[in-house]
Length: 88
View 1: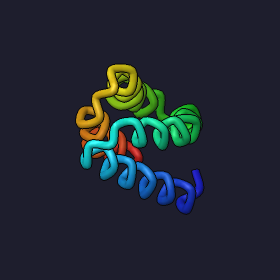
View 2: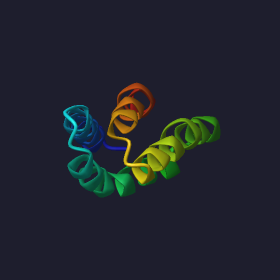
View 3: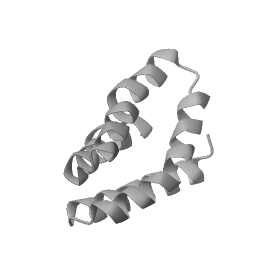
View 4: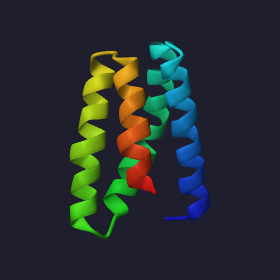
């Protein structure tokens, strides 16, 4: 994975988390919908099956559940404390 693409994705995720923490759940979900395909691509490109499964189980599934429930704070927490560290 290209470092520039990964850095750009992490910046976008941080920006989305900020939007969500400010209480704008609808805008955060809209932005999140734009980056989900990039996250899925990164997960599928991971050579380590264990890391890929960890990303899916600990970040992607909970994030999609939080989006469905329109829980902006939970989404921001998952982005900040699960997804971005996994991308690092």
